[in-house]
Image (tube, rainbow over the protein chains, first blue to last red):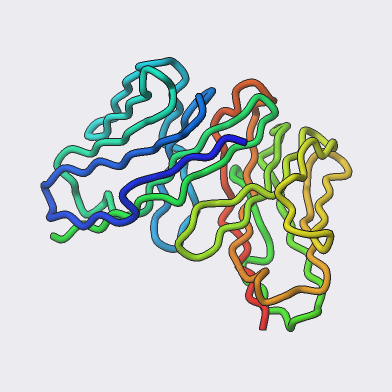
Length: 110
Length: 116
């Protein structure tokens, strides 16, 4: 089945620095979804990308889906303390099943 | 409420006990998923329902795990003869999408199971 790997596992940044997390798959993905999970919380949907080479922006967040639909990235510009949490990528299949990576945990030092 | 509701939020069980975890999805959501999340890891797929039909149960770790959604709404995940390795957060998610494009998953707060 579809499996996604995320790097890095942890990222510590100074507030104001940029942050990027990467999601990679050995197989072509039908779509990619990104979720954010705050400490002690549950995953919250951020965005879904479907098209090859797609780029979407949400304020300081930029999401990309690779041309080959095997990788994706989430970039945060000028991190803030409210950005702390674990960012997961996931991918759904035609049958409805979604599988997730192990996430990148971001900590931001004020 | 408007979101996915799970109960209990916390459950402590002695090894060998049976537990039942409940999920009340967003009204009208056809798809319902159960995930297991161990500390420091991503959600691991357990099973998927479309209405009352269990279309995929490939992620259930053993025959001690059983899930049902008899009327296509509320779902229950049952774990029989719990073991320490069952300790995890069990997340329920629902979606208005069916197949093809998974769409946004709405997660509940989760049920944290601790097996002593």
